[in-house]
Image (cartoon, rainbow, N blue to C red; front, top):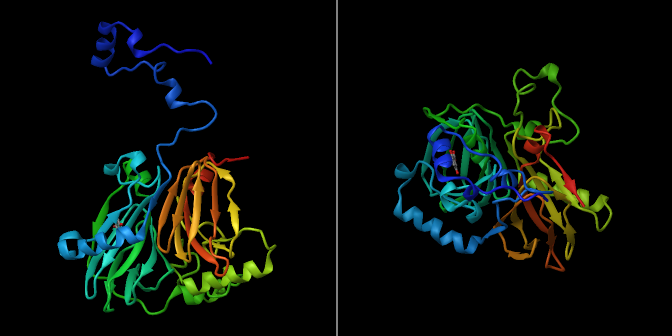
Length: 347
Ligand code: GTQ
């Protein structure tokens, strides 16, 4: 490859003149902007242990009252981007949020899309667009762009959930902002009950609301997702991948515009090498345990642990148990890459 000129090769007075006029020579930076063959991601394969994180999050509950935090969250920051940037990958933000019994995180709406994956505790709920969504372990609750949401907790133990947002991308686009609002009036009925049967949807002719809404389902209960994975595993080749994607049941499209969400089952002792793909991804253990190898690194993931991996990286997952299946929640940047025409898989 051609050796390109360096910044130091240019006379100091010339460089100073360029700087004074807001000009920059391309050639010294061309190779880092357009590296050969594949990107050089800042995102590093990173593992956050729940056992380590949990006591620190509970301590935040002692140190900072909810009124002083609004959202009491420890951000899972990828050191490859610098912790202060608070991003897990180029487009993915991860946070562990704690709500204590009786606490209330007030209503707001914002441009970034969010989802919550419930990690532990009973009795909390999120009200999204007037719909009260109970939060039970493994449930996925959507708070899509622009919809009002607030969190409450009627139980007697701490509740913890994983927040996944497309905040780094929306912030990068200078499109990130929020609006505060009053407590929402709760509408009766739950859309996850209306869409309980895969393959059938409520007939549009009888739907006064719901049909045609961009986010017809806001809560995907774990019991149903788990049952779908078990059924798929029973129906599928014994060493095949057992993964489902959270979709909008009206359109079959990904549930959100930017990030994609999936649930993966690893049979006892199953080892699964994922296709090498352009989007970065995040893995979170809902049940059981999993070993994740990404490049040269091996991460022994325990219950509720979370790992981020860069794009273009070979990821192998293995269930170390010879008796019980493992269940993982997966978030990735694939809808974004597909929409932008950047999606690739490599051998
Ligand atoms: O619960 O609304 O982790 O607005 C970051 C921003 C959670 C939330 C986060 C938020 C929220």
